[in-house]
Image (cartoon, rainbow, N blue to C red; front, side, top):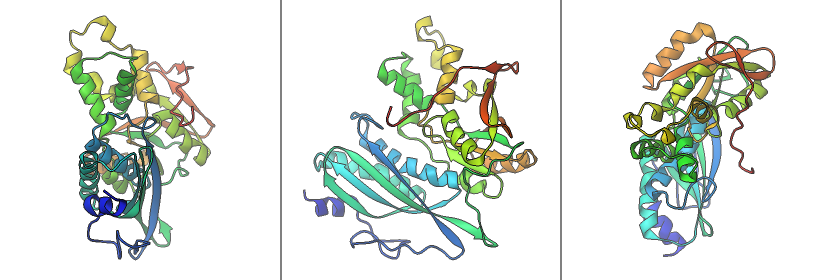
Length: 332
């Protein structure tokens, strides 16, 4: 199968929202009146971002989900995306489920594939996604990393740490019951981009970022760009690892049980969750709760933005924790 046959069979569709889609030298995308384009790009490399044994349907889902998560963190509405795909070989048994997983998630968010490139090489998936953010009275409604203010509450959506638990099982550092591993692996391989929550937080949140490299590490980007510090109440964090509540833990031998310190590390430094960390004024707590309800996404308040720079962690008794929780580093 040649390159153009591959595109025609698995990825070409009639343009729905784009002026011109797949099949020309350039796609043409017209932004709606009164909006800005929000653009993000992510690359997934085999052996670095995913295992060679991953289900290609789930890989297709995740490849787009991580990009949609960036749009969610900006409060953007997805519009379109491009796909650059390097493949060791054109294998229909891999391409069919991969494209199905990719395009199923795209359809769910009204985000159409409008172009890209394919070539032979080590498996590498690069997606650029395009979204729209309203502009009202000359001001963009985009959520940025730079708007957090002292006194703001700090929130995280959904659950965190489960994807990291699955990774540690794959690495052999943890042994867990089969049902727990299945739950954690689902979170690692098929994250849910919080697009609806991001849109609902426009005009409510002061800053936002998605959790790709770890809760504290990604929050650190907000603190740096906003010129502020933060205090995190870690007592709330360990309950955010959904796998902790799995009934399969009951009766497990002591060697399979995780310590409080291990649960805390999963929550604070896990990464690959693709939840949203965001800040909002304390006066907006009702508005945040409404945004969570409207988007059918749970949110948890974890701490407070402070004027003094730095990130401080405290336990349930208000005592400081000195341990550091480094985030994922792509070059480490």
